[in-house]
Length: 88
Image (cartoon, rainbow, N blue to C red; front, side):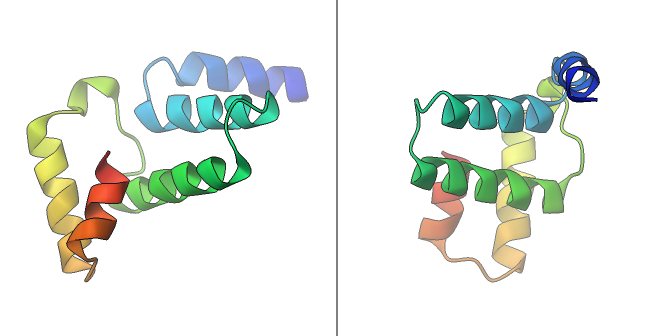
């Protein structure tokens, strides 16, 4: 099952920014090239992005997408610093 999941997500992540980013984050944490705090912070950002859009193909990562995501965060009552943290 683990091998199947690895192959499935490796294929899917070539097109989906979130899957790619989540897999890379977990991989870096497993290899200990990022701290546990960084992993938690990055996964929190990916979770917030998933609340905005379930799937994000790479080609949709545009300034217009970021403006929409920013508006989404503002509508949720997030402060500017929090929004910036999730956008960097």
